[in-house]
Amino acid sequence: MIEFGLRLLKGPWATAALVCLAAFVILFALAGQTINAPFVYTAPK
Image 1: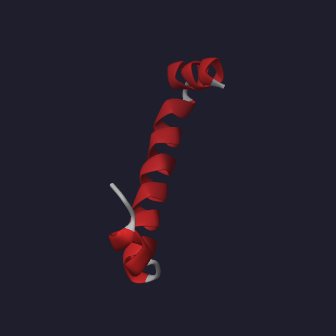
Image 2: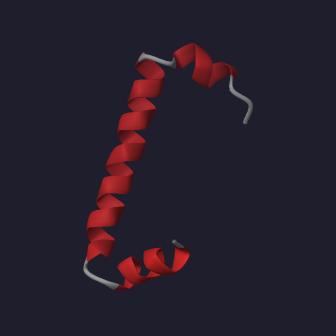
Image 3: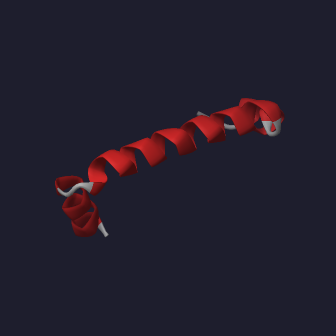
């Protein structure tokens, strides 16, 4: 899996993967604030 990831980072998919990852993180953060706020606030950090 790690070797596959490094192979993608060296290829043309790096930008697309970073964009998708950033979008996923943003959507997850928004969903956590609006839907799962209590769980997020009480989760250990």
